[in-house]
Each structure stands twice: as structure tokens, then as C-alpha cells.
Amino acid sequence: MRDPSQSARLQGFRRHLAVGAMAAASLLAVASNAQAQAEAAPLASVANDPWEDFNRASFKLGMGLDRALLAPVTHGYMAVTPRVVRDRVSSAIYNLGEPNTVMNQVLQGKPRRAVRSSTRFVVNSTVGVLGLFDVAAKMGLPPRGADFGQTFGRWGAGPGAYVYVPLMGPLNVRDGVGRALDIVTDPVSLFVGGLDTDFGKARIAVTVVDLRAVTNSGYEALKDAADPYVTTRSAYTQYREALVREATGETEALPDFDAPPPEPNPSPAAANP
Image 1 (cartoon, helix red, strand yellow):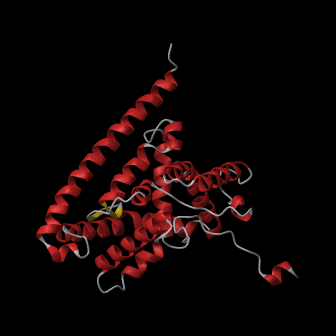
Image 2: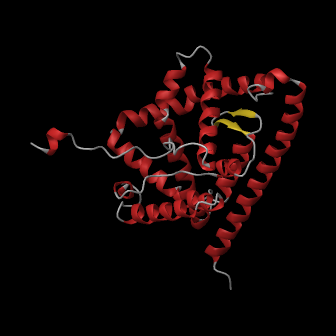
Image 3: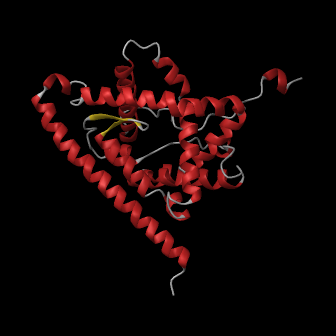
């Protein structure tokens, strides 16, 4: 007789795969349509943004939703939570993503990195108290993030058209498909039974607020930008291109901007009273 908990996990897994398959199919259909539009409109293809009018409307909606929903919650969180506590939360969230990183590093043909990331996960999940402290970094094992979007780029997939999704932010077709696969194949999520469990819902909520807090300075900087939409598009495109180049070995290793903040080092004066 099948264990009820196993049945629930299996059902959650199937739901994840169905959602991921639909998202991937939709985004791939969008990619082919975008390619046709880009060929018909050479000027738009310079920035690989054939839907600029639509994206600008989405960006405006996203910024409005951020001001009404995410920003107040995030600013309240930042006001009542000391920076040291927020850093610990960021570290724990990053640690939960390490198994997905390991999977992508294997798919990218980087077994040594996969071993290091596996070691990081074990060390930080135990000695680091469920990832609250990045003990592994102090042992010479710095974080090296990886995701399916980067993996696709590693093996030659182009970014496709740029698209802005309210509350999700900037994407391109390749990274959108990759994001869907990151969600449905996340080992931690599958282990606990899926996103519809209490743990899954809490993880999503905390991750969203933490990410908004980490990028708060970027949101503030957009207020002074001549064209916030173009600034966002340019920053995202350059960042993702750099990550793909790093994965293919075309550039030196880049800092992982998704990594948890470094542990504060004591000042010389504090170390030598």
C-alpha cells in the first residue's frame, strides 16, 4: 500500500512538471514569434526587444505594483530587522538553492564545481546551522551560482527576445524557460512536497521579500535614471551575458551577485585591542 505522504509528493511533482511544461511551451512559442517580429523590425532587434511597447507597459505596471505592495512590505521588514539578521536570512535562502546549483553545474560539464557546491551545502546545512552562516566560504569554498538559463547559454542557446514580467522582473526567453525548469526541478521543493506545501509557500514569500530587500538600492537608483526601463533592460542583459560567458570559460570568474552577503570581518582595532 502506497504511503500517503509519498502519494502527495508524487502529485505535487506531477503538478510541477505540468506547470513547467506549459510555461516552457508558451515561452518557446513566444520565442519563435519574437524572432519573426525582430526580422521584420531591424531597429527593435538591436536591443533584442521586439515588444518594447508591451514591455514598457508591463514595466510601468510592475513598478506600480512594487510601490503599492512589495516596497511597503520590504521597507517595513528592513526597518524592524537588523542587517545582521537579514544577512542570515539571505544566506539560508541561498543555501536552499545549492542543490539546484549542483544539478546545473553537472549539466554544464563542471564536475569539480558540482563537488564544491555539494560540499558547501553539506557544511553550511550542518556546521552553518541550516545555512544561516556561510562556513564553507571561510574554508575556501566560495559560492558559485548556476541555473538552467545559464546552462542553456553554456551549450549555445541564444537569449531570445527580452520580456518584462510584472512582479518577476526582467527576463529573456531563454532565461524564462530556464526559470520554469528551475522551479519544477528544484530538489528541495520536490523533497518537501512542492510549492503548495506550507514550507513551499513560506519559502516563496521569504525569498521574494529578501530579494526585494537585497535589490532595494537598485530600485532607488532607478528613480534618478533618465530612462528606468532602458537602464533595467541593459543591466539585466549585461549581467546574464556575463554569467553565460563565465560558464563557457570566455571570461574570468565573475562575482556571484545572487550569493549571500559576505561575513563581516572584525576591524584591526577590534582584533587587537
